[in-house]
Amino acid sequence: MSKSYGTISRQEKNWHIECEPHVKTRLKRVFPQVSQHASKFIELSDTPSNCHDLLWFIERYPMRVDDLKYMKAQSKAYVSLKEDILDVMDYKRPIKTFDLAVPPYEYQRAAADLLLNVKGLLLGDDLGLGKTASGICPMILPESLPALFVTMTHLPMQIKNEIERFAPHLKCHILKKASPYPLHKEGEAAPDVIITSYSKLNGWAEYLAGKIKYVVFDEIQELRTGYTSQKYSAAKLISDQAELRLGLSATPIYNYGDKFYNIIEILRPDSLGTATEFAREWCSQEKRINDPKAFGMFLRDEGLMLRRTRADVNRELPPVQIIPQYVESDPKVLDQIKGKAMELAKVILSSTQEFQGQKLRATEEFNIMMRQATGIAKAPYVAEFVRMLVESGESVMLYGWHRDVYNIWLERLAEFNPVMYTGTEGPAAKERSKQAFLNDESKVFISSLRSSAGLDGLQYHSKCKTFVFGELDWSPGVHDQCIGRLDRDGQIKQISAYYLLADSGSDPIISDVLGIKKGQLEGVKNPNGELFEHLITDGGGIKRLAEHILNKKVIKRTYIL
Image 1 (cartoon, rainbow, N blue to C red):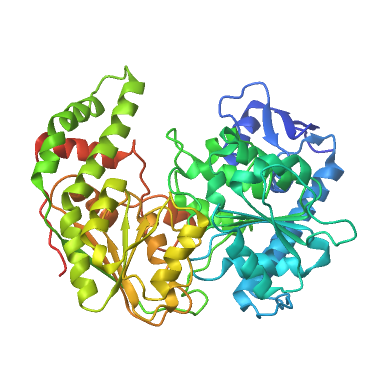
Image 2: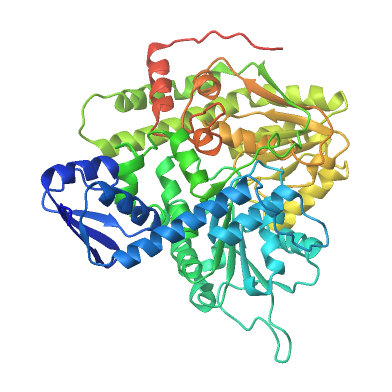
């Protein structure tokens, strides 16, 4: 009998490992997710992948396993799943067909086929590639019903229309109240698909849990904050008892990469181990992903996330023309906040580690103040630029962020009947704005940078091919998502995206960040592409802006005109 270096026992959801010191050291190297300070024993999550790796490890360092049969069965299941993932993703076997009224593309069927194999999947395809169609495919299978489709507050009717277009035989029901009521009359068939918003989910969670077999979370980044929100707890209660779970998002995370854990935990529980293990293995102390490219490749390799670009599916659209454009700004607006801005900048850049709460509040206030003042200062000149485009025959999508900025645009562009699609309008008002724009009743479509989720159909507008970013966001992904409203399937026109930049205020720093910073999200989504950093208000961009204000630096740049 070979030497035994220790024992491995299964305790609840963990493997409890006691072994010789040098073997323990090797274990810590092989499994970076375990505590590197463990002395007496090592705890490792009981997941199929860990079972597979443990079997490999004990070939080199034999140990007594109290449930070796279970460990081997989990390892075998893991290997089988990996083979299925490769077969689907590399098209090594025929992709499952789904008999929809509108035939889905092969890549859409492949996503649905992968979901049926892995049971939980984050689908992060580019905007415009039809993620909803992939989500509808499994709904035609009786074993996947009843299904639940969770989306944004203003989108349930749009989702219902899409389901009825692809699968008209399915009976859909949109939840009308925040608390349970009978979903069908006596003698009638129950709905096949229930559609609701995140805002209503909490009131229905206990009622739906255990009844739903398939759940789709549209714009699943809404759940990124985890158990700090009631909607996450509600979503988890339902998803844990569902057989299939699909998350849809072209931008899964805007900020810290560790929030991927919360999303994956909804879709494939325990696949990343515990939150502590995940943080040890993948994250820095600042809770950012240490190596976004490696993490993205891991997610795809494990069948946890699938992302395709237009190029990947051979459905490339005309390239988008990015045009930075200088505009004037009113120095008086920025002069009014100069003193306060400098005070806040000093607090932000203070070297003391005390009063961290004060620094965080100062950072948030400084960011809001600078961006709003910059937007107001250049708003009249942005309006004049838009006027020039409209008078030349263009219909313009104008993106901003602050209400005071919108008001200036509305006043100065009133003759073009501007319509609003921001975070304050209800679903009906948003639909009226959209239709007015599509029917050429309005020439200017004013939208919030972060409030255009679900906006579709504009790619068919005969004249709309022009974006204007009148205000900027720190995140490149936010701008990309806006552009994706036109740059998507059905678009045959050359798209122009104008970034209107002032040489003062927050614009010089934000525009530099948008252009040269590399980092998180794109590394996760596309390991072979350029990386862009998605900053939040306590990131390096704010500190650079504070330094810029205090040092009174003017950044010179060359614009493409």
